[in-house]
Image (cartoon, rainbow, N blue to C red; front, side, top):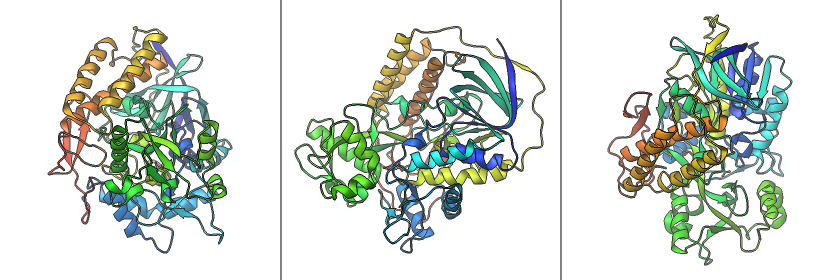
Length: 538
Ligand code: SIN
């Protein structure tokens, strides 16, 4: 089918979370024409649901070295130490930039920025906005700015189906909008800022848009995908009576305690840092207590908080609980682990450059080595506010080439389609199976079963052709990424950070990254820029 070129820009950005919005603003201010394309409304992204905040070493009790050490410790020896140094080194500037955009961080009664503690931080360093509404307020402030920029066009309800290439360079995107019109947008640069893939699981904190589209289309275009099996599960997610909702770790940072349904406090049995143990350790502790008590949840006990303080400090959590008739200050908030944050993704450097000229990546879709094998809490928003500035500076130096002259592109769409009922059934079985196999505790037997089932599904759903049915294309993206994750999880025969194998509890002898590239077998790459002083957490 021939698809017409509808527009040409300097830069296309896929996704409207915090990192995509900052890229758009900074590029527009440098007179680049930008098209920001987003599947749903511009407000919908994972950033919107971020509660905790941003970790930045601002206080006198903190330092660059301390933040670095906490990051590397949490990352279990798989961090790229040079990347971690760069991100933390730029943190204060990126914070000041956010303030200049109009973000007003919460203050203490002494009028200094309030900093709280989250898992695996040795000092309070997480700054926040609107109590637990950090993501929502930062996103809103940035959107207000983006909407006033003359150089930015916003396409909402538009799904990028595929990247387009001319010779080895990415030159634009194939888009389908809500009216099912298909068109091509050409661009000198494409920035993937489309977030993670939590929706491949039954339980996730991620919104419905998180189907891994940007990562899957980059893989199809030849991008290198790194550590895709490394996904972080958040220990405390409210799954009761409605959509899953994050229950921020900051509550535990400020005194919330976990107890099983028999009322026994258990966290200190599993790790000396108890409620503030690294997320993977605590999430597995929850699973074990849930199994022991034959329950689908444990309770987060917040009875030590003064009610008024809690309601003002955690308004988002409180509202969610009240809407679900949860006895917040009585028995506590029922919580269980759920998929939260993809650590792996499109392999990139500190500038968001990938192995494909003109293809860039920021935010959760990127894998640059900052988070190692386990992300330090609130380091993700830090990455989201730092890397866009570095990316934009680098991109500005790389504009000396031309866009293709053709006005149409030939696309082979998949002629096969499925009914809505069939699609929903594929999606829910995929989510069920991934939740059993590539979850918190993995083993070869169950992973192999998943691989066999995925292979069978791939004989029914052709991953090689793009579908013009957006839901089917999302399913294809999720199948592809589930397949890569399952394969890498089988072949990573050790436990490290978020990847825990009950049949291989040993740590690796070498710290390695899984590497996938289209039409090639999985490869393993040794982590070169190693931390010097790290204790490996298991
Ligand atoms: C939280 O608020 O617990 C989540 C923050 C994060 O994922 O870093």
